[in-house]
Length: 267
Image (cartoon, rainbow, N blue to C red; front, side, top):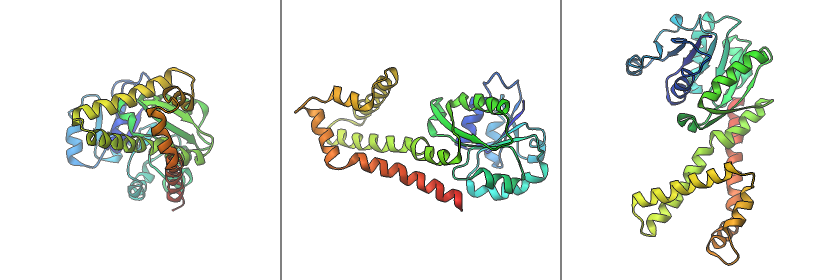
């Protein structure tokens, strides 16, 4: 199986680094393509990649093609790719808001998988939702899933609606966490903690809370009840959040991302 990653930005390189370690790929079976001369030069110093700056030298022989470019670059890219592809190839899109139908029409391809990755894939903790066009077989989809899992975990969804929905939860979700962390960091510093101590307090609190959640079947509400006692400090904080409708605002933010993903797909 020969895999080509088009685009060596953060997400493309993240998946390339994960997949190159997979037992599904033999040595030198992962190719990466980019047009940035400086990026090409730096990538050629990494021995486990075959690096290309010309599509004609790598695209025709690839079995799986991961497309990791900005959506606004896709028209020009697809026009260049179209004469070089064949009907057996599978194209896996890492682009936000670009529908399977749009890719099929512009690229002239039948086998397309649309994904929604997220930033923690860079540290092997990502989650990627994915769905496929009709022509992709179960065997092919299993191979793709195994490759997606090299950066964390993957979730198969039935329709593209759930790709857009996962954009609002997991795709954009890390930014929500960073937003909350930033607010807590600012509060810690205002209370007099140093930058270093503020970071330790906040980052370890988040990491520990997530670990507790993952190791048990308890709901977040149950954990909140365990931490908060009547008339205590935690209850005061939670009551403040409830009074300020923080829960509803977070839900609205997630739906804002979801709705924007749908809008992008309609353009």
